Length: 195
Ligand SMILES: C[S@@+](CC[C@H](N)C(=O)[O-])C[C@H]1O[C@@H](n2cnc3c(N)ncnc32)[C@H](O)[C@@H]1O
Image (cartoon, rainbow, N blue to C red):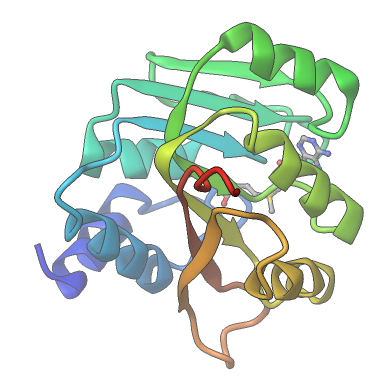
């Protein structure tokens, strides 16, 4: 499916939702989906930190038909449903808390597609990045939303510079005139043992 068709399908799937209920730019998300679909190995397990109302997970699931979907959100912005698809497992809480670490460890899952879209403060997105390193599969796509947001951008700059072994930037989706959105996609591979 080409990018234009993917974007039309996203718009169809999210028709009638408010900007709060679905906070992605359809064109950017379509770009990421096109990138992932071109890979011989399709993602089967999805984790989203900052899942909001759960519509991003629902949309991505309609393209990839994940085996597993796990969602984390503190529900401070929305008090409605976090889960839009029956198979999704949700945890409501602060992703920066020790309980989030316990939850990830108790789940004992490995994910091959992870979207980080929770708190946008530098310390929050940094903490979320370290949290997901506990459950990345090899390989794993790791996407950051609102990549042009000042504090997210500051953290991503460090990642671009190679701060975390195994995590390399692949592509940025978005336009400069499109508010503060933008999806930045990285690939994680288990680093080779040195020495
Ligand atoms: C920008 S919204 C993104 C919603 C969804 N990903 C979308 O695109 O529609 C960010 C979400 O992350 C949640 N959030 C912010 N900080 C968080 C934290 N420290 N732990 C868990 N969730 C958090 C907010 O309550 C909100 O639901």
